[in-house]
Length: 209
Image (cartoon, rainbow, N blue to C red; front, side, top):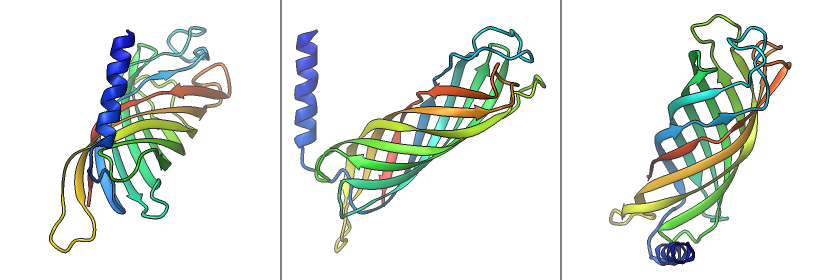
């Protein structure tokens, strides 16, 4: 196990030292696949299929988009908006759509010239869960907040003659960790507010232009 950890650490150091422009000042867009993971300790309400049992959000799948802006000064700061969608089976009984959008303050942990660009984000937004086929008033909406951990890795880059900055295509992986506070008047759970731990896993691409 120690050998694998050492190999991983060496690989990260080598990749992060390769010269490239992982980010430059300006706008970028992207998107990809999102695997939603949601948990709570709250129990199902009397309107749910199994009153008293724990609320269940599995299985599911989804997608996300990202649009952002990187600053030149300070070069460690960026802003991003991440609208995303999930389709999740609620309480093993019905499929529901979950729509979310978060504003992100992105803090980069490496120099802009490195190919490997690890980052941490602080985020806040709103989440809306739509009603499924079962008419049990499960639709809920509420604020969410948390932090995200991820990285981008430059795959290709180019600069037009006379251009002031480099355009690039990057692979992106990110794992937000956030709390959703669903307000639902005892319809979803046995409480008027249902806290949800949401840890979506995202993989995709970004393009800086």
